[in-house]
Image 1 (tube, rainbow, N blue to C red):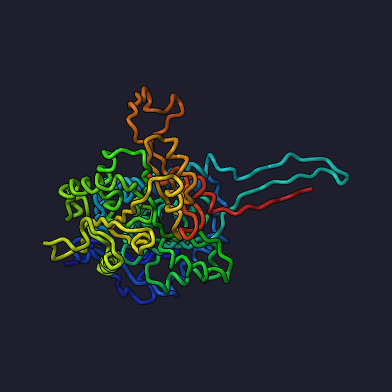
Image 2: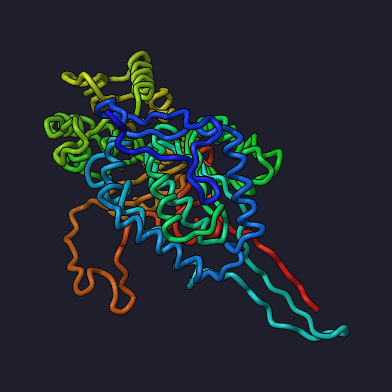
Length: 509
């Protein structure tokens, strides 16, 4: 059977097989194990040519010197092209990643396209490209100064397998809007959607070399991180990979943006009722089969709520439907590859060996001859176990019973090398907020779940009049990133845009 999607490398505005003449990377569907796509495996020389093209396009081409409004118009056009191909994009992403449910639309596919529009608007209307200081008189005549923003230069973007399209866009859109040129290296397991972005760039009319896509393995990434023609690396992936990139980029003092691993905690405080404890179930680990760095995979639960929580898990189990990601009734799809499933199995076994109690799961589901499926797993343990400290990247929730005291909650939540996200739940929002602000993580939520009457939002649904703005997808507001070994820098919104600029101070007399 021929592959559904086949692409060539996209370098300097041209489609080509690359140095190896088309030596293939086969992309498989993680639910069926069938080959769905084929792309060339780029060599380091292919990557170097893409970098050189991006360098020429930045140094000699028109892109960096275009007015922000001109770049913005082309980015909006890229968004329009991708929206027009929304059905194909969704089909590709489901087949490539095994994504199910609303996350496919809101995050993985259409919900990410809006970042082209939001970054276009930032570049054109909101960003302070120039901060001028009023001129002053002096003994030598008039003088003054200005602080200006300029694009950082050539950007190497390296993305992972879990949310490939969204992360390709979250790195590409702000970099292009800021006037940078980009060489994108998607993960070899999930490279296909990157080429739809390349097709959109071509159709929108981006100049040659402004946007390039090369596929391959670690040696291609090494070329990006060590080549002196690259000014900045933006990467999402594991903390171990981030450390290697940080070391490799240090020789040329590259600007680094690293969005890395997490072991985020959902903290439940002791004034929460048993009904809420029963409702928690598997928490967030059903989301994309637990393959998300910011998912709250540790549950800090007051000891007196443990019995109610166990009742809730037992009641929730029959509602879990494992299987075909294209079926709208499916709630849990596959892991991305067999080696990832084996990693999950190894960590679960470590928890059992260390004395964790298994409430459910901890095995492969029966009846699946194909696909990398794994049952949702809940384990009760302590915060010093590997399952509480290491990023599992699978549908595994580690429950850690504790006193419910605020100080204990903060201590346990912070007892991690990571600091990406987390959440605090209390009867009232004020207490939850007070604990959340003490947890060293980049993205926190504070939720009050007491019996407070719902408020009528009235006209505008809580916004307006005049300033109301509808949410058009993910990554357009806020700031996403972590503390400690969860990374360096922030993505999304104005902070993500600003990351792709340099600051220059100019004085004149």
